[in-house]
Image (cartoon, rainbow, N blue to C red):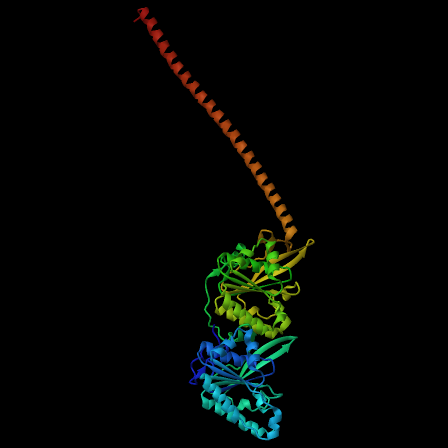
Length: 569
C-alpha cells in the first residue's frame, strides 16, 4: 500500500525503535526515538495504558527487547487481567523475566507532610528494575500521580526534567503516559516540552458514536505525519491507519472481470469491469442494487476467487435467503471459504473503526473483490465530508491492492437530477458507474439500467430493463413508443403484438410466394405442352415431307414403267 510516509521510513538519521504496533511505525517513519522518552497524552479511556503496554509486549516478543512497566494507578495483577483479553500473555512474559511489572502507589498525604519532594527514590527503584531484566524499553503509566499533590510548579518542572534526562541517561526507549489538561496536552502542561516525541490520543463522541484518533504532535529530529489518524482497539491490540490517498501511483490492470451478467458484460465492452477498478451501483430502494452485487460476487466465487461482502443492512442468513429467490445459491461459496459475508450496522462503530476493520478483513481474507452494500448507511455516523474521506481511503486502499471494489448507493427521488449524484460525493472517484431507475407505467413498477460512465472502455449508451426472476438477472431491450419507454407487462404486450404482426407479414409473404410459384409452374406446364405440340407438328411435317418425296418418286417410277411398256421412243 502506498502511503504518505513511503518515502520517509528509513531516511532519517535518528535511530528509531520499532513499536510493532500496526500503522504506528509507518506514520512515525520507523518507530519511536530510540533511547529517548515519548509522551503519550490524552483523556481517560483513550488507550494510553494499552499503547504503552503493547509497546513493551511487542518489544519483548518481536524484537527481543525486555521492558519495565511501572504503573502509578494500577496493580500488577490488574494490569495482567486487563490485557489478557487482547492475547498479550503478559503473565507469561513476566514469568519469563522478559517484562517486569512494578506498581508504585503515591500517598498524597505523605508528600504534603514532608513538604519536600524529589524522584531519587523512583530512580533507584526503576534503575533496579531495568537492571534486573536488562530492559531496553520502559513505560511509566500515569505520571500525573507522581506530582498530583504538588502545587509548586517549579518543583514539578525541575523533577520532570530530571526524570526525562535520567531516562535518556539509562539509554532506554521510554513511553510515558499523562492525562490531558483542560487546555493543555497534559495536566501540568510541561511534559510535552521536555519530551522528544509527543503522541496525542483522542476518543471523541459524534452522534452518540465513539471514534478514536491519534496525532503526532511533535517528533524532534524526524519527519512525521501531522494528520489525525483513525485508530482501533480490538482483540488484536492497537491499530493506526495511515492515510493512503495522497498518492495516485497505483498500477492498473487491463484485464476484465465479469459482472456475472453476460449482457451487462456486453454493455461494458464485452469483458465486464476492469480488474482492480471501483464500481458504483446507485439507484432507488428495490431497484436491484444488491442483486447485481450478488451476481458479481457469485461470478467471482465461481472462478475460485475470494469475495468479501460487507453488508450494512442484511444479515448473512438474510442475504442467502433473499438471493436464493433469484437463483443464487451462495451457501457453497461460503462453505468453501470463497465468500465471506461481514454484516455490521454502521452505528456500531465510528467511521474510523469501520475503516480499520475493513483493512484487517482484507488483509486476512485477501479477496479478489470487495462489495460494500450500501455505503449510504455510513451517513448515520458521519457527515458528508467524513464519509467521503473514509470512502476515498477505502477506494485508494483497494485500488492499491488490485482489488475490484463494488459499492452500492441508495438515491432519493426519481428525477435524473437526483439520481445521477451520490450523497457520499464519491462519484468522481469511481471508474464505472451503473445507474438503476424505477419507472412506473401501466400500473407497474419496473427496473431500468444504464451505464452512466465507465472509464477506459467503449460502453453502451442504451437503456436496458433489468428483470429478476427465479433463474437470475436478465437485461432486456426496452421499447419506446411516442417518446415513452415500455417496460414490464407493457413491454411484453408490445413484444407479443410485434411478434403477431411479424408472423402476419411473414405468412402473407409466404402466401404470395406460393401463388407466384403456382403461377410459374402453370406457365411452365403450358410451355412444355406447347413445346410438345410443336415437336408433334415438326414430326408430322417431316413425315409429310418424306411421304411426298416418296409419292413423287413412285409416280416417276410408275410413269417410267408405263412409258417402257408402250415401247415408246
